[in-house]
Structure formats: C-alpha cells, structure tokens
Length: 96
Image (cartoon, rainbow, N blue to C red; front, side):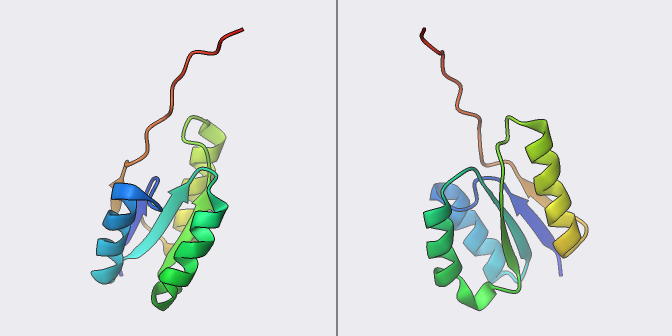
C-alpha cells in the first residue's frame, strides 16, 4: 500500500485531498496543528479507513515538530510515497 503524508490534511482543500487518497486505497498520515475537535469528527467520519489513516499534531514552523510528524508517519506506514505540502505557516507581526 502506498503512503501519503498531507500537511493540514484535516480541513479545506487538504481534507478533500486526503479523502481522495483514502478512496484510492493509500495509507495517509494527516498532519494538523491544533484542531483536536475537528480531528475527532474526522475519525468518526472516516471510520471505514481507521486502519489506513493516522493524525499527527505538529507545528510546521517548528523543526522538532516536523521531525516528529515524519517519524510517526514512517513508523506507522513505512516509506512516504507522496508528500502534499498543503499547510503554510501563518506569519504575522507581533505588536508590543
């Protein structure tokens, strides 16, 4: 089975992309930043894919988090065949 890692694969375009990969019988690691309620909803919605999908929390602006996401992906499903970089860092200027 091929394996896809999709950043921000739990909402918007990323969710639709994840659904397509699951329907094509890929195993999918879904990265998310902090929306645990949405992840719980998707675990119910995608219950038929429970053996082929995992959710891993992390901040893509943090190197250690990125390494954690990739490590979890590889430990569960092996080689990553497809990487979809759907997430982008939210950059904002901090006001003092």
